[in-house]
Figure 1 (cartoon, rainbow over the protein chains, first blue to last red):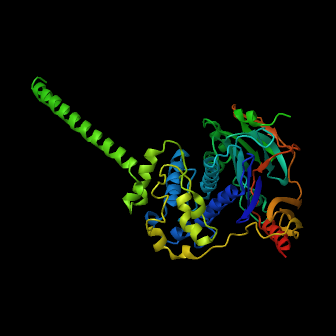
Figure 2 (cartoon, each protein chain N blue to C red):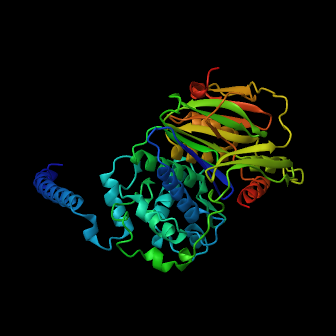
Figure 3 (cartoon, rainbow over the protein chains, first blue to last red):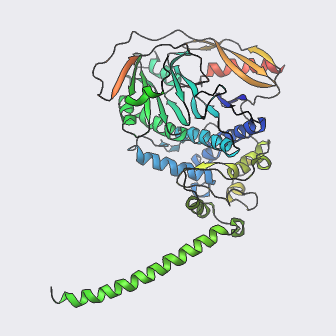
Length: 248
Length: 224
Protein backbone atom coordinates (compact mmCIF):
# COMPACT_ATOMS: atom_id res chain seq x y z
CA UNK A 1 0.00 0.00 0.00
CA UNK A 2 1.48 3.28 -1.14
CA UNK A 3 0.59 6.95 -0.86
CA UNK A 4 2.10 10.21 -2.02
CA UNK A 5 1.52 13.65 -0.54
CA UNK A 6 2.72 17.07 -1.45
CA UNK A 7 3.82 19.32 1.37
CA UNK A 8 5.53 22.67 0.89
CA UNK A 9 6.42 21.73 -2.64
CA UNK A 10 8.05 18.53 -1.53
CA UNK A 11 6.81 15.07 -2.27
CA UNK A 12 6.42 12.61 0.53
CA UNK A 13 5.99 8.92 -0.20
CA UNK A 14 5.10 6.14 2.12
CA UNK A 15 4.72 2.49 1.30
CA UNK A 16 3.92 -0.41 3.58
CA UNK A 17 4.75 -3.81 2.11
CA UNK A 18 3.20 -5.78 4.98
CA UNK A 19 -0.02 -7.53 3.99
CA UNK A 20 -1.68 -6.10 7.09
CA UNK A 21 -1.19 -2.51 5.86
CA UNK A 22 -4.05 -0.16 6.72
CA UNK A 23 -4.75 3.17 5.11
CA UNK A 24 -5.29 4.84 8.50
CA UNK A 25 -1.72 4.02 9.52
CA UNK A 26 -0.40 5.83 6.47
CA UNK A 27 -2.74 8.76 7.10
CA UNK A 28 -1.50 9.05 10.69
CA UNK A 29 2.12 9.06 9.61
CA UNK A 30 1.37 11.80 7.08
CA UNK A 31 -0.49 13.79 9.74
CA UNK A 32 2.60 13.62 11.89
CA UNK A 33 4.77 14.84 9.01
CA UNK A 34 2.28 17.64 8.43
CA UNK A 35 2.48 18.62 12.10
CA UNK A 36 6.27 18.75 11.84
CA UNK A 37 6.02 20.96 8.79
CA UNK A 38 3.52 23.28 10.51
CA UNK A 39 5.78 23.53 13.55
CA UNK A 40 9.27 23.75 12.06
CA UNK A 41 8.76 25.43 8.70
CA UNK A 42 10.66 28.70 8.58
CA UNK A 43 8.50 29.64 5.57
CA UNK A 44 5.32 29.75 7.65
CA UNK A 45 5.14 33.03 9.56
CA UNK A 46 3.10 31.53 12.39
CA UNK A 47 4.98 28.28 12.81
CA UNK A 48 6.53 27.76 16.21
CA UNK A 49 10.06 28.16 14.84
CA UNK A 50 9.05 31.42 13.13
CA UNK A 51 7.59 32.73 16.38
CA UNK A 52 10.89 31.95 18.09
CA UNK A 53 12.77 33.77 15.33
CA UNK A 54 10.41 36.73 15.60
CA UNK A 55 11.07 36.76 19.36
CA UNK A 56 7.37 36.20 19.96
CA UNK A 57 8.14 32.96 21.77
CA UNK A 58 10.94 32.14 24.18
CA UNK A 59 12.68 28.84 23.60
CA UNK A 60 12.11 27.97 27.25
CA UNK A 61 8.36 28.32 26.63
CA UNK A 62 8.44 26.30 23.43
CA UNK A 63 6.96 22.84 23.00
CA UNK A 64 8.86 19.72 24.04
CA UNK A 65 9.55 18.68 20.43
CA UNK A 66 11.01 22.13 19.72
CA UNK A 67 13.29 21.88 22.73
CA UNK A 68 14.27 18.38 21.64
CA UNK A 69 15.25 19.65 18.20
CA UNK A 70 17.32 22.48 19.68
CA UNK A 71 19.11 20.06 22.00
CA UNK A 72 19.81 17.68 19.12
CA UNK A 73 21.04 20.57 16.97
CA UNK A 74 23.49 21.58 19.69
CA UNK A 75 24.67 18.00 20.02
CA UNK A 76 25.18 17.80 16.27
CA UNK A 77 27.06 21.09 16.22
CA UNK A 78 29.51 19.61 18.69
CA UNK A 79 29.69 16.27 16.83
CA UNK A 80 30.62 18.04 13.59
CA UNK A 81 33.15 20.55 14.82
CA UNK A 82 30.71 23.40 14.27
CA UNK A 83 29.97 22.61 10.62
CA UNK A 84 26.37 21.96 11.55
CA UNK A 85 24.80 25.09 12.98
CA UNK A 86 21.12 25.99 12.97
CA UNK A 87 21.89 29.64 13.74
CA UNK A 88 22.31 31.73 10.60
CA UNK A 89 22.34 35.52 10.76
CA UNK A 90 20.44 35.58 14.02
CA UNK A 91 17.75 33.17 12.84
CA UNK A 92 17.31 29.52 13.68
CA UNK A 93 16.78 27.10 10.82
CA UNK A 94 16.80 23.52 12.04
CA UNK A 95 15.72 22.05 8.70
CA UNK A 96 19.10 20.30 8.39
CA UNK A 97 17.98 17.70 10.88
CA UNK A 98 14.24 18.15 11.30
CA UNK A 99 13.45 16.23 8.13
CA UNK A 100 15.47 13.19 9.16
CA UNK A 101 14.00 13.34 12.64
CA UNK A 102 10.47 13.56 11.24
CA UNK A 103 10.97 10.64 8.87
CA UNK A 104 12.51 8.51 11.59
CA UNK A 105 9.60 9.18 13.89
CA UNK A 106 7.01 8.53 11.20
CA UNK A 107 8.80 5.21 10.73
CA UNK A 108 8.66 4.66 14.49
CA UNK A 109 4.88 5.20 14.36
CA UNK A 110 4.61 2.43 11.77
CA UNK A 111 6.83 0.08 13.79
CA UNK A 112 4.69 0.83 16.81
CA UNK A 113 1.72 -0.48 14.85
CA UNK A 114 3.52 -3.71 14.09
CA UNK A 115 4.69 -3.00 10.55
CA UNK A 116 8.09 -4.36 9.66
CA UNK A 117 8.38 -3.75 5.93
CA UNK A 118 7.94 -0.18 4.72
CA UNK A 119 9.67 2.99 3.72
CA UNK A 120 9.08 6.66 4.38
CA UNK A 121 10.49 9.14 1.90
CA UNK A 122 10.32 12.91 2.19
CA UNK A 123 12.12 15.37 -0.03
CA UNK A 124 14.60 12.78 -1.26
CA UNK A 125 15.49 11.37 2.17
CA UNK A 126 14.53 7.81 3.04
CA UNK A 127 14.13 5.45 5.97
CA UNK A 128 13.68 1.89 4.73
CA UNK A 129 12.64 -1.02 6.93
CA UNK A 130 12.57 -4.72 6.12
CA UNK A 131 11.92 -5.70 2.53
CA UNK A 132 9.72 -4.74 -0.41
CA UNK A 133 6.62 -6.60 -1.64
CA UNK A 134 8.85 -9.03 -3.53
CA UNK A 135 10.71 -9.91 -0.36
CA UNK A 136 13.87 -8.16 -1.51
CA UNK A 137 15.76 -5.27 0.01
CA UNK A 138 14.37 -1.89 -0.97
CA UNK A 139 15.91 -0.55 -4.14
CA UNK A 140 16.76 3.12 -3.93
CA UNK A 141 17.80 5.16 -6.93
CA UNK A 142 19.96 8.23 -6.38
CA UNK A 143 18.78 11.04 -8.58
CA UNK A 144 21.20 12.59 -11.02
CA UNK A 145 21.84 16.18 -9.89
CA UNK A 146 22.42 17.08 -13.55
CA UNK A 147 19.18 15.58 -14.81
CA UNK A 148 16.25 14.97 -12.51
CA UNK A 149 14.80 12.31 -14.77
CA UNK A 150 17.78 10.06 -14.34
CA UNK A 151 19.25 8.02 -11.56
CA UNK A 152 22.97 7.49 -11.28
CA UNK A 153 23.19 4.77 -8.67
CA UNK A 154 20.94 2.00 -7.42
CA UNK A 155 21.23 0.96 -3.79
CA UNK A 156 19.79 -2.03 -1.98
CA UNK A 157 19.03 -1.16 1.60
CA UNK A 158 17.17 -2.46 4.59
CA UNK A 159 16.79 -0.99 8.07
CA UNK A 160 18.84 2.10 7.46
CA UNK A 161 18.52 5.67 6.24
CA UNK A 162 19.68 7.43 3.08
CA UNK A 163 19.89 11.23 3.04
CA UNK A 164 21.15 13.58 0.36
CA UNK A 165 22.37 17.08 0.94
CA UNK A 166 22.85 19.49 -1.87
CA UNK A 167 20.06 19.94 -4.32
CA UNK A 168 19.24 20.86 -7.79
CA UNK A 169 18.55 24.29 -6.36
CA UNK A 170 22.09 24.45 -5.16
CA UNK A 171 23.19 23.38 -8.61
CA UNK A 172 21.30 26.34 -10.02
CA UNK A 173 23.21 28.57 -7.70
CA UNK A 174 26.48 27.17 -8.85
CA UNK A 175 25.61 27.48 -12.52
CA UNK A 176 23.80 30.77 -12.21
CA UNK A 177 25.19 32.72 -15.15
CA UNK A 178 24.30 36.02 -13.50
CA UNK A 179 26.40 35.26 -10.45
CA UNK A 180 29.78 36.94 -10.54
CA UNK A 181 31.05 35.49 -7.26
CA UNK A 182 33.63 32.73 -7.65
CA UNK A 183 32.44 29.17 -7.11
CA UNK A 184 32.44 28.30 -3.46
CA UNK A 185 31.97 24.60 -3.87
CA UNK A 186 32.46 21.94 -6.47
CA UNK A 187 30.18 19.45 -4.73
CA UNK A 188 26.69 19.14 -6.17
CA UNK A 189 25.27 16.42 -4.00
CA UNK A 190 26.34 14.24 -1.13
CA UNK A 191 24.37 11.11 -0.35
CA UNK A 192 24.91 9.50 3.05
CA UNK A 193 23.85 6.03 4.17
CA UNK A 194 23.57 5.80 7.94
CA UNK A 195 22.13 3.57 10.66
CA UNK A 196 18.92 5.58 10.41
CA UNK A 197 17.64 8.61 8.53
CA UNK A 198 18.10 11.03 11.43
CA UNK A 199 21.80 10.19 11.66
CA UNK A 200 22.24 10.17 7.88
CA UNK A 201 20.47 13.52 7.48
CA UNK A 202 22.33 15.49 10.12
CA UNK A 203 25.74 14.22 9.05
CA UNK A 204 24.93 14.75 5.38
CA UNK A 205 24.06 18.37 6.16
CA UNK A 206 27.30 18.93 8.06
CA UNK A 207 29.47 17.08 5.55
CA UNK A 208 28.03 19.07 2.66
CA UNK A 209 29.13 22.25 4.40
CA UNK A 210 32.68 20.85 4.43
CA UNK A 211 32.73 20.88 0.63
CA UNK A 212 35.16 18.34 -0.88
CA UNK A 213 36.28 17.14 2.53
CA UNK A 214 32.74 16.04 3.38
CA UNK A 215 33.02 12.57 1.92
CA UNK A 216 36.24 11.95 3.88
CA UNK A 217 34.55 13.12 7.04
CA UNK A 218 31.76 10.59 6.52
CA UNK A 219 34.44 7.97 5.87
CA UNK A 220 35.76 8.51 9.38
CA UNK A 221 32.37 7.74 10.94
CA UNK A 222 31.58 4.19 11.96
CA UNK A 223 28.48 2.84 10.23
CA UNK A 224 28.24 5.59 7.60
CA UNK A 225 28.99 5.60 3.88
CA UNK A 226 28.85 8.43 1.37
CA UNK A 227 28.59 9.10 -2.36
CA UNK A 228 29.52 12.57 -3.49
CA UNK A 229 28.97 14.02 -6.95
CA UNK A 230 30.92 17.06 -8.08
CA UNK A 231 30.22 19.48 -10.89
CA UNK A 232 32.56 17.66 -13.25
CA UNK A 233 30.31 14.61 -13.03
CA UNK A 234 32.77 12.68 -10.93
CA UNK A 235 31.55 10.66 -7.97
CA UNK A 236 33.78 10.12 -4.96
CA UNK A 237 32.67 7.49 -2.48
CA UNK A 238 33.75 5.81 0.72
CA UNK A 239 35.27 2.38 0.74
CA UNK A 240 32.26 0.54 2.12
CA UNK A 241 29.71 2.25 -0.11
CA UNK A 242 29.75 -0.46 -2.75
CA UNK A 243 28.31 -2.97 -0.29
CA UNK A 244 25.01 -1.17 -0.77
CA UNK A 245 25.19 -0.86 -4.53
CA UNK A 246 22.98 -3.17 -6.59
CA UNK A 247 25.22 -5.61 -8.42
CA UNK A 248 23.83 -6.02 -11.89
CA UNK B 1 55.04 14.29 56.31
CA UNK B 2 54.69 12.52 59.66
CA UNK B 3 52.56 15.33 60.99
CA UNK B 4 50.16 14.73 58.21
CA UNK B 5 49.68 11.04 59.02
CA UNK B 6 47.08 11.32 61.79
CA UNK B 7 45.21 13.91 59.86
CA UNK B 8 45.04 11.48 56.96
CA UNK B 9 43.76 8.67 59.20
CA UNK B 10 41.01 10.89 60.52
CA UNK B 11 40.15 11.80 56.96
CA UNK B 12 39.79 8.07 56.11
CA UNK B 13 37.20 7.75 58.82
CA UNK B 14 35.52 10.88 57.56
CA UNK B 15 35.58 9.51 54.06
CA UNK B 16 33.98 6.25 55.15
CA UNK B 17 31.22 8.25 56.81
CA UNK B 18 30.82 10.27 53.65
CA UNK B 19 30.63 7.10 51.57
CA UNK B 20 27.97 5.66 53.84
CA UNK B 21 25.95 8.85 53.72
CA UNK B 22 26.37 9.09 49.97
CA UNK B 23 25.35 5.47 49.57
CA UNK B 24 22.27 6.13 51.66
CA UNK B 25 21.38 9.21 49.62
CA UNK B 26 21.88 7.35 46.32
CA UNK B 27 19.86 4.37 47.52
CA UNK B 28 17.05 6.62 48.74
CA UNK B 29 17.04 8.41 45.41
CA UNK B 30 16.93 5.11 43.56
CA UNK B 31 13.96 3.97 45.61
CA UNK B 32 12.29 7.33 45.05
CA UNK B 33 12.98 7.19 41.33
CA UNK B 34 11.58 3.67 41.04
CA UNK B 35 8.53 4.74 42.95
CA UNK B 36 8.10 7.75 40.69
CA UNK B 37 8.47 5.62 37.58
CA UNK B 38 5.83 3.22 38.78
CA UNK B 39 3.34 5.87 39.67
CA UNK B 40 1.10 7.40 37.08
CA UNK B 41 2.82 10.41 35.56
CA UNK B 42 -0.50 12.15 35.28
CA UNK B 43 -0.64 12.55 39.03
CA UNK B 44 2.17 15.03 38.64
CA UNK B 45 -0.36 17.44 37.16
CA UNK B 46 1.44 20.44 35.79
CA UNK B 47 4.86 18.89 35.41
CA UNK B 48 7.02 21.11 33.29
CA UNK B 49 7.96 19.49 29.99
CA UNK B 50 11.67 19.52 30.70
CA UNK B 51 11.45 17.84 34.07
CA UNK B 52 9.21 15.24 32.58
CA UNK B 53 11.64 14.84 29.74
CA UNK B 54 14.51 13.81 31.92
CA UNK B 55 12.32 11.21 33.51
CA UNK B 56 11.40 9.79 30.14
CA UNK B 57 14.95 9.71 28.94
CA UNK B 58 15.88 7.65 31.99
CA UNK B 59 13.15 5.20 31.18
CA UNK B 60 14.03 4.90 27.54
CA UNK B 61 17.40 3.50 26.68
CA UNK B 62 17.00 3.64 22.92
CA UNK B 63 17.42 6.66 20.73
CA UNK B 64 13.90 6.42 19.46
CA UNK B 65 11.04 6.93 21.80
CA UNK B 66 7.54 6.76 20.62
CA UNK B 67 4.78 7.42 23.10
CA UNK B 68 2.33 4.59 23.20
CA UNK B 69 -0.80 6.70 23.36
CA UNK B 70 -3.27 6.04 20.62
CA UNK B 71 -2.85 8.79 18.06
CA UNK B 72 -6.25 8.57 16.39
CA UNK B 73 -8.24 10.79 18.74
CA UNK B 74 -5.48 13.29 19.22
CA UNK B 75 -4.46 13.60 15.60
CA UNK B 76 -7.74 15.03 14.46
CA UNK B 77 -7.84 16.12 10.87
CA UNK B 78 -8.52 19.76 11.54
CA UNK B 79 -5.44 21.88 11.65
CA UNK B 80 -6.01 23.44 15.06
CA UNK B 81 -6.18 20.26 17.03
CA UNK B 82 -3.37 18.77 15.02
CA UNK B 83 -1.10 21.63 15.88
CA UNK B 84 -1.90 21.41 19.54
CA UNK B 85 -2.09 17.72 20.07
CA UNK B 86 0.67 16.60 17.80
CA UNK B 87 3.39 17.01 20.40
CA UNK B 88 1.62 14.31 22.29
CA UNK B 89 2.06 11.88 19.50
CA UNK B 90 5.35 13.21 18.41
CA UNK B 91 7.73 10.40 18.41
CA UNK B 92 10.84 11.85 19.78
CA UNK B 93 14.42 11.01 19.75
CA UNK B 94 17.40 12.72 21.14
CA UNK B 95 18.89 14.01 24.30
CA UNK B 96 15.78 15.74 25.56
CA UNK B 97 13.16 13.15 24.98
CA UNK B 98 9.52 13.85 25.65
CA UNK B 99 7.63 12.15 28.20
CA UNK B 100 4.63 10.14 28.94
CA UNK B 101 3.10 13.04 30.77
CA UNK B 102 3.92 15.29 27.86
CA UNK B 103 2.19 12.66 25.80
CA UNK B 104 -1.17 13.68 27.22
CA UNK B 105 -0.91 17.43 26.97
CA UNK B 106 -4.63 17.80 26.55
CA UNK B 107 -5.04 16.90 30.23
CA UNK B 108 -2.70 19.57 31.49
CA UNK B 109 -2.66 23.15 30.31
CA UNK B 110 0.40 23.86 28.22
CA UNK B 111 1.95 27.28 28.53
CA UNK B 112 2.84 27.29 24.85
CA UNK B 113 -0.74 26.95 23.72
CA UNK B 114 -2.00 29.87 25.70
CA UNK B 115 1.03 32.05 25.10
CA UNK B 116 0.75 31.57 21.39
CA UNK B 117 -2.63 32.42 19.94
CA UNK B 118 -1.29 32.27 16.36
CA UNK B 119 -1.29 28.47 16.53
CA UNK B 120 -5.04 28.64 16.74
CA UNK B 121 -5.15 29.85 13.19
CA UNK B 122 -5.56 26.79 11.05
CA UNK B 123 -2.82 26.58 8.49
CA UNK B 124 -4.03 24.71 5.46
CA UNK B 125 -1.49 22.26 4.12
CA UNK B 126 0.08 23.27 0.83
CA UNK B 127 -1.78 20.58 -1.02
CA UNK B 128 -3.33 17.54 0.52
CA UNK B 129 -3.97 14.73 -1.85
CA UNK B 130 -7.65 14.32 -1.44
CA UNK B 131 -10.76 15.19 -3.36
CA UNK B 132 -9.12 14.55 -6.71
CA UNK B 133 -10.63 12.68 -9.60
CA UNK B 134 -8.94 9.49 -10.63
CA UNK B 135 -6.87 9.58 -13.76
CA UNK B 136 -3.76 11.13 -15.23
CA UNK B 137 -3.35 14.87 -15.27
CA UNK B 138 -0.70 16.83 -17.02
CA UNK B 139 0.49 20.13 -15.65
CA UNK B 140 1.42 23.21 -17.62
CA UNK B 141 4.92 23.66 -18.86
CA UNK B 142 6.58 25.92 -16.33
CA UNK B 143 9.67 27.91 -17.04
CA UNK B 144 12.74 27.59 -14.96
CA UNK B 145 15.74 29.59 -16.08
CA UNK B 146 17.53 26.33 -16.81
CA UNK B 147 14.73 24.98 -18.99
CA UNK B 148 11.13 23.85 -18.99
CA UNK B 149 9.47 21.66 -16.41
CA UNK B 150 6.28 19.72 -16.88
CA UNK B 151 4.81 17.01 -14.70
CA UNK B 152 2.12 14.37 -15.08
CA UNK B 153 0.21 13.29 -12.00
CA UNK B 154 -1.57 9.97 -11.62
CA UNK B 155 -4.50 9.87 -9.16
CA UNK B 156 -6.07 6.69 -7.85
CA UNK B 157 -8.89 6.66 -5.32
CA UNK B 158 -8.46 10.40 -4.89
CA UNK B 159 -4.80 10.13 -3.99
CA UNK B 160 -1.61 10.93 -5.81
CA UNK B 161 0.07 7.68 -6.73
CA UNK B 162 2.72 8.95 -9.08
CA UNK B 163 4.33 12.14 -10.32
CA UNK B 164 6.32 11.95 -13.52
CA UNK B 165 8.47 14.48 -15.29
CA UNK B 166 7.47 14.91 -18.90
CA UNK B 167 10.08 17.42 -19.73
CA UNK B 168 13.17 18.41 -17.98
CA UNK B 169 16.15 20.39 -19.04
CA UNK B 170 19.17 19.23 -20.89
CA UNK B 171 21.97 17.27 -19.46
CA UNK B 172 24.73 19.38 -18.06
CA UNK B 173 27.09 16.54 -17.49
CA UNK B 174 30.58 17.16 -18.75
CA UNK B 175 33.11 14.61 -19.74
CA UNK B 176 34.40 13.11 -16.58
CA UNK B 177 37.90 13.93 -15.63
CA UNK B 178 38.87 11.45 -13.02
CA UNK B 179 41.01 12.99 -10.36
CA UNK B 180 43.88 10.69 -9.53
CA UNK B 181 44.62 12.54 -6.30
CA UNK B 182 41.83 10.84 -4.40
CA UNK B 183 42.47 10.01 -0.79
CA UNK B 184 43.39 6.39 -0.23
CA UNK B 185 40.12 5.26 1.39
CA UNK B 186 37.96 6.90 -1.21
CA UNK B 187 37.12 5.71 -4.69
CA UNK B 188 35.99 7.59 -7.75
CA UNK B 189 33.97 6.99 -10.86
CA UNK B 190 32.21 8.95 -13.53
CA UNK B 191 28.50 9.22 -12.81
CA UNK B 192 26.42 7.24 -15.26
CA UNK B 193 22.70 7.00 -15.78
CA UNK B 194 21.23 3.69 -14.58
CA UNK B 195 18.20 1.92 -15.93
CA UNK B 196 17.37 -0.56 -13.16
CA UNK B 197 13.87 -0.60 -11.68
CA UNK B 198 13.77 0.99 -8.24
CA UNK B 199 11.24 1.19 -5.40
CA UNK B 200 12.21 4.66 -4.25
CA UNK B 201 14.11 7.60 -5.65
CA UNK B 202 16.22 9.66 -3.33
CA UNK B 203 18.65 12.46 -3.78
CA UNK B 204 18.39 16.00 -4.98
CA UNK B 205 15.09 17.45 -3.87
CA UNK B 206 12.32 18.73 -6.04
CA UNK B 207 11.80 22.17 -4.65
CA UNK B 208 12.02 24.27 -7.74
CA UNK B 209 9.23 26.77 -8.22
CA UNK B 210 8.66 25.51 -11.75
CA UNK B 211 8.04 22.00 -10.46
CA UNK B 212 5.52 23.25 -7.93
CA UNK B 213 3.73 25.37 -10.54
CA UNK B 214 3.39 22.54 -13.02
CA UNK B 215 2.26 20.13 -10.33
CA UNK B 216 -0.29 22.62 -9.03
CA UNK B 217 -1.90 23.03 -12.45
CA UNK B 218 -2.05 19.26 -12.85
CA UNK B 219 -3.77 18.96 -9.46
CA UNK B 220 -6.15 21.79 -10.34
CA UNK B 221 -7.32 19.95 -13.42
CA UNK B 222 -7.77 16.84 -11.30
CA UNK B 223 -10.17 18.80 -9.12
CA UNK B 224 -12.39 20.46 -11.71
